[in-house]
Length: 203
View (cartoon, one colour):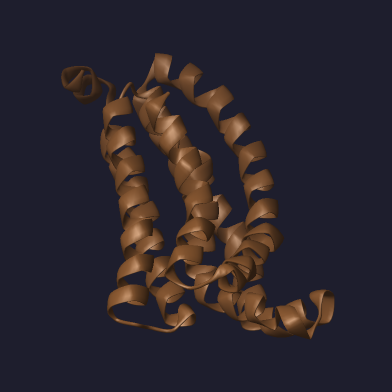
């Protein structure tokens, strides 16, 4: 439950931090980017996550190696499905947002161009993020969720308030940092998806 609360908090904290770091306008541009791309990706990811969560516990009863193979397969498929559309949206983001939402929202498309790395990593890993909970490693998941909150705040506040960087550069730093965190979560979960004998020895 604490990990779930912190995870939900970290999802909604970024616009609030951007208001503090810059102004409500910048936060609004980010929020539109998140809603226009992040929300559809989340809905697709949740559907895939439900299928994964229905299969993984059953396979765990047989051999954790089977869960490991399913984990890698789902992650690979998510990456292959998401990478091309997200990159294309990143390349043409400014024009798309201008066409759909008007000239005044063009900056949201610019933000999409610097956030696309995060969206790819998030789309690939987030649907599998309950793996540590399935393996009874809630303490590791909680630590990752806390780290995500801290990193998301630091990578926005420090560049904006101390280094006085432009919003686009700050969000690029934020995007790269979040991408690395998701990649880290992928390999952490993969580490605990050992053979059944090794897994039992770690409990």
